[in-house]
Amino acid sequence: MSANTDCPDPDAQTLQTLVDELERLHERVTTLESELSRKDDRIGHLEAELEEAHTENENLKARLEDLEESQTPIEARLDAHEKKLNANKDRVGELQARELEKGAHLLEEHIDNGEIDVIDGRLERIRKDDGESYFRLPESDDPLERGGDVSLSYGDLLPLQQLAKMDEDMLRATTSALPSRLAAKLWKARTDPSVGDNPWRKGSTSVREYVTAGDMKHWIRRQEKGISDDYAKKLVSRTIDALLNLSKSRLAVKKRTQRKNGLEYTERRVLLMDDVDILGEMAGSRDT
Image (cartoon, rainbow, N blue to C red; front, side):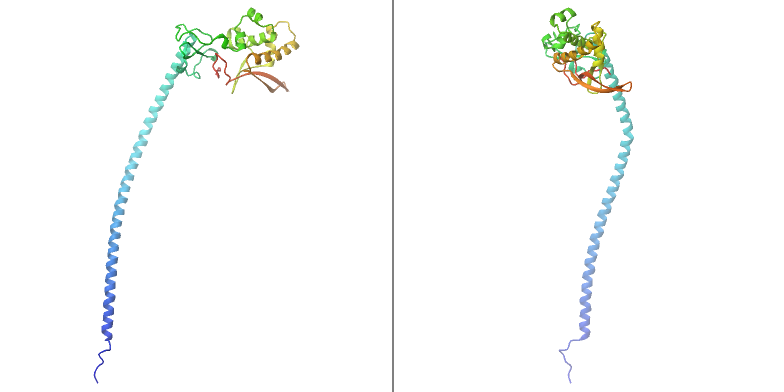
């Protein structure tokens, strides 16, 4: 009997299967080797970048140390410079105060009015013919006559200020009302140190100056000899009304409750507030 040629050879099929598998494995190995090579390249790049970053970081650390070491001398120089500036500012302020006390008129833009220490702590802002604003001590004439005449006219003043500028005879001729004359004298006592008998007190916070009703009563009895305590109390109320009217309400009246000798009582106070603009006076000026 002859052999069947159509029947496949099992050994040949096995061999072919092995060959095919071997080729797939070879291709897979080749692919993996390529991927590994790319990964090696990527790792190499990352290591190089990491080394650069490390080097830069070390450089930055060194720079930071240099800056920290140089910071102390810079701060020391700044402190020394600030102290020098403050010393110069104090010297300029002292010189300006001396000039003002000699009667000088100094340009407003050159004055730090919060730093000037003058008699009674009072400066007056004025405007002259040259259109510039100046500071001076109240009613002091400039010996060098710089800037021309003061533009502030008598008519610009409050009625209370106008009356306060009058002597006793002129004041009596101008007004027959005793409370108005007392209000004018009281205001003059506040602004004119030569008067001497001044019941006004320096305020605090938002109050520039104030006078209590009690102090006003005693002051009135010193001004008007021989009047009774009861009449003085009535004059206090009328004088307060005159102060408010003649100052065009630049002054304010507030009540304050306080204790004395274990007893509680309420007393009125006439207040000149810090933010009130009084012509010829610097708002906010107060002895420190």
